[in-house]
Image 1 (cartoon, rainbow, N blue to C red):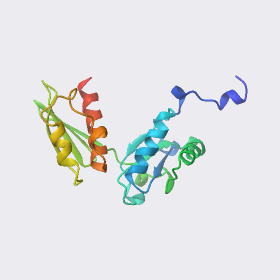
Image 2: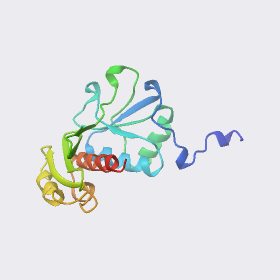
Image 3: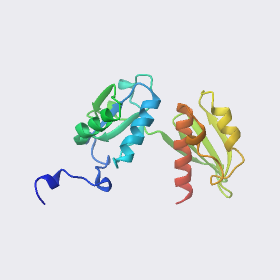
Length: 185
């Protein structure tokens, strides 16, 4: 492989964030819309990133950050700027206090399974995969999301991303994806 071949990456070969803490960084944005746009741009280019809760030391009002492979900071920033996005901060995760917070909590109630993502909870009946409850958050679209999804199976319910437009809708989408993943195991 030639010198330039070392720097060419195919989408499937993008670095993983499963490295040690010193190898990761977090992107801090002004608002949730920017996090969602950045996540979509980075995933479309094949970057293996994670949306996480911000550590208290870098919290700015937005309840989400993007964890990324720190060695790729320049490439990622270049891509984001090209797409019209610029994070407020880029912080290396070099201290336990700067560890991003996992957004998920899974609770098995026997007949029911609940996934909490950030401040939103999605509960299903395990045998039918029917959504029985949506709760949490304080965003104005939560009642609408619940009305459209409760009583339907995971396969029939609309994706929260399709019908929600707030941080709560985004968090519910994450819970929806995680509960779907849990059910496919």
